[in-house]
Length: 262
Image (tube, rainbow, N blue to C red; front, side):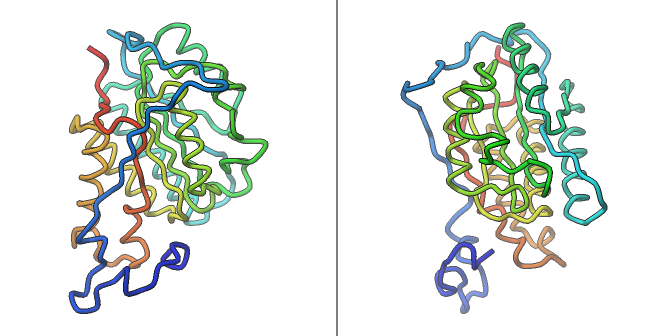
């Protein structure tokens, strides 16, 4: 991972203190984004949508075959995130690699003014068209032109796309800006080659704080970064995984919350 960051080792690790510099000077990055109307801009989601309705979430993931460790981690992430959401009384929709189904579900939610709170994307799976930015999947303009809807009730979107999902910084930023234009309150992304194991851990801890502890999106990410840096979480792990949490950034409103609109 350090190679992919292209940073000189002295700027990454303090030999005297025996610690990563990011442990001392960083927790997470947040980018407040307020997109200006432009070509294809559909306007912000209706702030009154979803009021009084039960919370709902969509987990969009790839289908796969095989028992490789990284795929098992993706499956574990789906189960953990789904479990946290269901414990909070959330209706969870699992959509496997079907863009038409995703578009129909989003359109139905918008039309019926339902309370979509989370759209979680697991972009890890090789060979399953689950690579962000490909012509056949989530190409630029997909949400504006193909889906053609605004996201109902200003949900948070988590694009948890790691190395086998083909996510890059440019793709992640383009997708997050497009989602914000379509009505997302905030978009949490990773644009670096995050390992599947690290991606699962970050997702599980983030939703624990965001959903179960009712923290804001920005605070949930901050807590996640702090917790995953503590010794009890780092014991026995490859050092490459220990800085995974610094690969995530939050675009949009850091004060966005999971709870339904009042």
